Image 1 (spheres, rainbow, N blue to C red):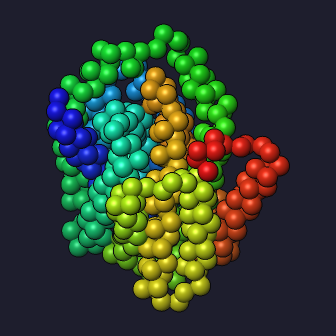
Image 2: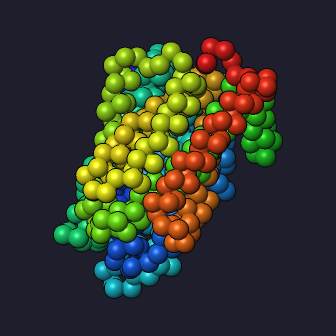
Length: 406
């Protein structure tokens, strides 16, 4: 297949998965905290249900993507991902919506994502091997650009209704099957050349991937920091942003959508800048500084007293997030051997999402007892403590990454 065509099909397939997730990102908290008038703790539990399948299944998803045709896996996942949205649309249409049904929807979507993400991530190095950092950054930009489209659609929930949005979500997800099918010749080539072959048993193969990551002086510290980012910032993004928007500014679906658009808008802006300048020469240091800057943005968001300034703080947070996510993913993509790539990236995804359920529950509970704005301070302070500990460990001579990444 023409490499440029493969690149196009890959990116379109990516957008068809992330845009529906953008709708979901707005629709889920709106249904829970606005329509159903549930607490931040309940929203945290729903976000936990959305993310916890990744903890259980994503390593198996990575192994599957290393051993089988990744495009076929994507084709199946896109088809399956349309079903939970159709189910929830029917429940709402039948006026039978309950918190339990939302949790079932979240668990189903989490399961599909656990298999789709390693397959998609594993293909990127193959599609964009000539300039990996640029490919990673462009994929990130399209990820967030697709999410913005989803956020804007989700923000119309009060005017067009949740049923229409869920049907749209299912239709776009199903369209991704077309582009996944177009990618199959490229994915078959990887299988035929032995790139995805592995003779180990399933459990042994997963353990080999874990051993590879945790014996690497580069991948191990990056995975640790990514997990902390997921725990503290992921939980804040999924729970505290909509909770603070509702508590302080009386937000509905439109305002919640604007919060996510502001964050992702900042992410897209800096992602475009990274593509233009060709990335950073010191990705690990850029990653750490971006994490520190993100905490300062959360403190700023808790200080401001106007919704427009709150959106501005979220946009700045998104700018820091673009650097953190792009640099961490680039470091892992560069370090992962081809035969283990999907497993390594599954471990990365596990770290990237694995802390989020715990963070969502803890920060959601903290927002109930102490308020959402105070919880933002806690997330920022904890991240600062993690970074201080990380730098101290390095000064003492432990976890010294490859100097090329410093």
